[in-house]
Length: 238
Image (tube, rainbow, N blue to C red; front, top):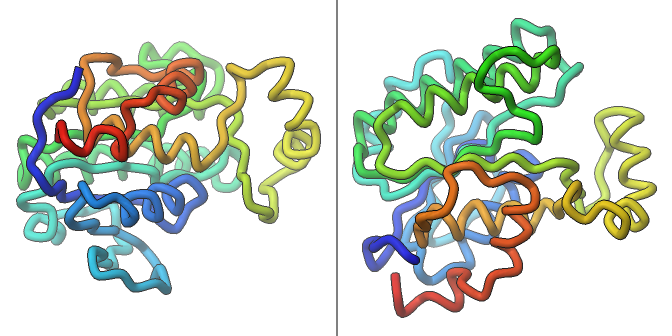
């Protein structure tokens, strides 16, 4: 099932200051199989760790300056994003599509054998026919990534992501979903995923490799989380 990887993985994380990205960072730093973690951030993380290299990069319109930093990496987890309604439509597309494509371009040129794990969303539409801008833009980013030439691309399409830790919710819908989460999880288990579980799945898949995918819908993400083949259980096979 597993695709061979180097003994100590060199992992890049984009979006580590966000909810899911924060859990990705914490989980990755805990794993002995991951030798180094490079976090590309737009603001300081405020933490230190022997394995962590923090790289400030505020202009994702042009990632050319990251070419050297991204050289020799084995895998990347890309969680950079923004909530619908928080920015204009033009800004939403720029962050969702342009930033993703530009980062992938430089990573592919610097580390052509790297695997790529991408945080998309439920309903993402690569055909561009959806009436929802978020779905169209996530689908557009997915389409480009899958054609970029990476040896392995993993697309994660979670439904409702439960924050786990208290936070200021971005809008009323998220406040409502958090409030009804216990019931919603029981009635519709394949429509919810914990943020920390999603993060763990994104790291496990990109580090261990798998012939499954490349698209992981919410049901598939839950299956990865429930699988006994996480990094901790698979150290001897990496």
